[in-house]
Each structure stands twice: as structure tokens, then as C-alpha cells.
Figure (cartoon, one colour):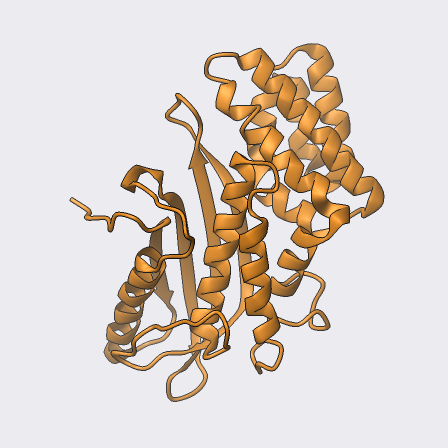
Length: 286
């Protein structure tokens, strides 16, 4: 039986895989896995009160690829989150991102501490950043633009990390990194995508168990907001993030639609996310 700490926001499963040889490294990284689990699940990230069953289901997979210093490691980190749908056993994916640039320092028995006002180390800054990104996305699915406060907290972490030597925090390093995730989310031009999250989940998925046709119609309408973003900023990173989580689900939803719904869904989705156009062609095939 898993005991969850009542009141915290995240129900985060943590897995660390290790490509480094040696028993001692395995011991240290096993300790790190436990420390990250406690850090993510026991930290109070918001002012809101959560019951145990309201916590946000999410997962972190860290693949440690090499040791680059005495206590320094190079790794990748994949972050996923999901949320339940109303009166249903179905959990919908909300956020899914693979971050290739994760370098961190961890010494045996080290305590993980974080202060949002300072950049103390890359390990807890990255973890806290993604905690706020998970929460921001989740809140956006329940109320229109509801995650703004937590995107702003993530942006504070990014700002504090501008002097860090580790990659992933600066706009100049890449057009797809932690800097751009939160920068896109808070730009007015991308607001329709966040409005899409609310319409898609709260007005769409949450009523599909009782009113599948109405729910599917709301989700179809939400794709018009994606088209608006695409028209203003084609091939933007925030659209890519949306489809990382939603492409397969969209195929499943609209495969059960009416012919005119299938046609519009295929047109909108293939336009704004051409990378997955072959996947979306399956909408017509069912």
C-alpha cells in the first residue's frame, strides 16, 4: 500500500535508469531516486489544498548516461502528466516532454532544497521548474488560463538560471528548451492554445462519458484555436508540445465522429501538425 502525504499537489512517480557501471553509483542513484520522489511529492507548490485523490498524476524518467565529474552527471529527463476525465476511468495525457539537456550534481545523502528566489543548483531548479509546468498545464485544463500564476513561477526559475553554466535555460541555446516552453505559454499570441486546453478538457472530454457527441463537438471547436495559433506562428514549439501529448488521443476521438467531423478534424490537424499527418489519416479509416 502506497502512503500519500495529504495536502500536496503531485502524485509523481520517479524512475532513474543508469548507464554507468559500478555498485556504488547504483547505490547513490537509488538514493537520488528516493530523494526526488520525496522532493516532488512532499513540497507544497501552491496555496491550494488538495485531497489525496485530487493530486496530479505525473511521472519523471531520468536516464543517467554518464558521470562527468566527482558528483556530476549527464542525463536526459522525460516529464509526463495526465488528468482524470469526469465520470470516467480514462486518464488523458496533458504534458509530455523529453528534455535532452539535464546535467546535475548530486552527492550521497545530499538533501534536496529549493528556493524560488535563487538558483542554488541545477537539479532542484529543473525539478521545481517542471513541477510548476505540470501544475500550470493541469490548471489550464480546469479553468480558462488558470495556470498563469504557475507559468510565472516557472519563468522566475528560468530568469534566476540565466547565469547558470548548465544548458536548457537560455533563449540563445535552442528554440526548443525550458526557456521557450514558458515564454511561449505566457505570450499573448499563444493564448488561444491555452484556451484550447480548457475547451478540449473541461467542455469536451469531461462531458464525453454522458454526452459523447457534444464533447466531441467541443474538442473539434478547440482545434480551430490551434489553427489560429498556427496562422500567427506556424511550427511553434508550443504546438509541438500540445501534439506530443494529444496526437494519438485526437485520432481515437475523431475516428468515432460523424463524416463531417472527421473531415474537419483531418483538415485542421493535418494543417497545424503536418508531422503527424499519416497518423491523422487513420481518422478517415475507421
